[in-house]
Length: 209
Length: 209
Image (cartoon, rainbow over all chains, first blue to last red; front, side):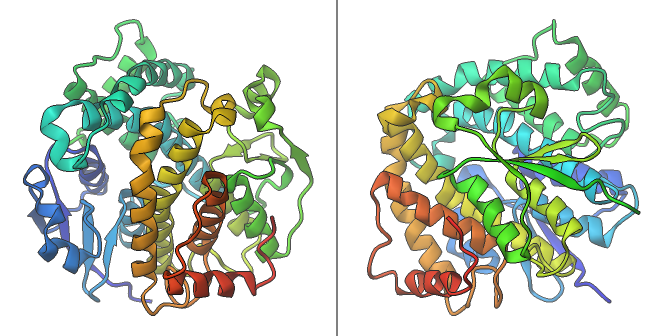
């Protein structure tokens, strides 16, 4: 079976989801042709982009049969099928479900609260949200702190968040925690496991910006 | 390879995510031993539940090797591996990524706005959210309306939302739209494609409550 091949990645700097795909590709040792979309200028809302891609989301992956894939994990799942070496989504059904479970937990407990604080609380991010809800930004500040405590606890004695090896769930967590720069929230110094895990991730040499 | 087998499904009535798993199993023709968790009484926050499952989330799937899976789609992905007949997550990498893409889009454009309106706007749902943010409930009311228009448009001439056959993405959408009963929002009469799609889903005889 020949699968449609990726021909173009629509990407944008500084946002955590496109970065998840960049790190995923770096782990695979794969480089794709890339088109940069300026989301702060609202380029992803342009009719040209939406008409072609079928959604305003970035990242998007164009295939040589004309298909466009959006949604970060759906894109990574397709890339894993095309470039199966250096497995990142789980080897076999049980690990696959555990990686998905951990990645989704991190999206819920950390990525979403951080995004809500930023997107509804930082004036410059109105371009992304169109209408902001400052009360929701404030509501999520303690949830970010709770999410950081939760992540530290979940690491336990594991080397990586889904178990003993690096997976998409670590990519999700790494990009999420780095995104806290935007809301000027550091990882608390006492979260020793989180800092050690972060150093293990960085040591791989694939954590591109 | 023998995979760990499901031994118990932790379930709860009326919430959309556990229902997604129930419909998924009905499509597979599979019935599992079930334990009902009373989320309105906060039973999922009890130490007994969290200590066992590793999270407060419902649904949860217990396997015979002692693993607990949470996160609805991760559970469905494991069930698809155990019961591969009547494929619902996509046959081959491209369809798998498209089903995931559509199911996630529906989660973002419809499930989340509806859940936010309900969980932050209905007094009786404070048990789930602990602290509510009424401004966020109000903020999401127009997003629900926009999501309904978006879904009607996305259906286009397709029989089902990810293409020409029923998949997890339809299960996600069906449970999401039914959940609007809670916020007393009907599907607009003029959304003819949505109503016809809903009738096609119901005609399968697997849309359990």
